[in-house]
Amino acid sequence: MTTTSPQTPDGRPDPGDQRIGGGRPRGGLRVALAAAAVVVAVVVGVLVWLVAAGPMSSSARAERAVEQTLRDMTGSESFSEFNSHLCAENRVPQDLVDNITASGEQTGTDLDAMLRESIAGSFPQDLVVTGVEINSDVATATVESESDESAPEQVRMLDEDGVWKVCEPGVGMGAVPQGDQPG
Image 1 (cartoon, rainbow, N blue to C red):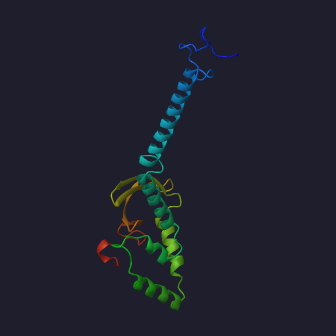
Image 2: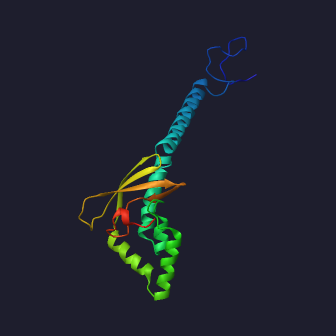
Image 3: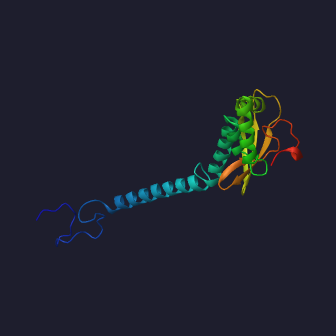
């Protein structure tokens, strides 16, 4: 009988041989298992980071949602759409929005165009969110603009039913004092 593994003179496998079944060395299997364990540990570590602190974390998703709300608000095409981005404490009641819209239609006044001009004057096109701090359901976004030479501003927002809303008195309403705002 011809064999590839070293054997003792009586035909039994050499107990010092590091081969499994006369084939691969056992040390190679150990190295492969160790490498697989390292790969698994790295993959698990990356997944934990993605979910706990990285771009898939709840705080990162909330930061993106806050930024998106501000972009959507600045891109509003109608008063009703703009109003929908305001938190409940600053939102104009829907019946008043409907009355204003109907009044504009009756007089031929394009209130939505007036709003777009107001937004363009209040929110620079290059508005950039430079930071977001979230504490439970309250967010503070730091925004700035290269075209506006004023200091960065803080915008307070609330999470209302899973949607971020802007809660700044007078946002988009010019210099309306807080006590005189509708709603």
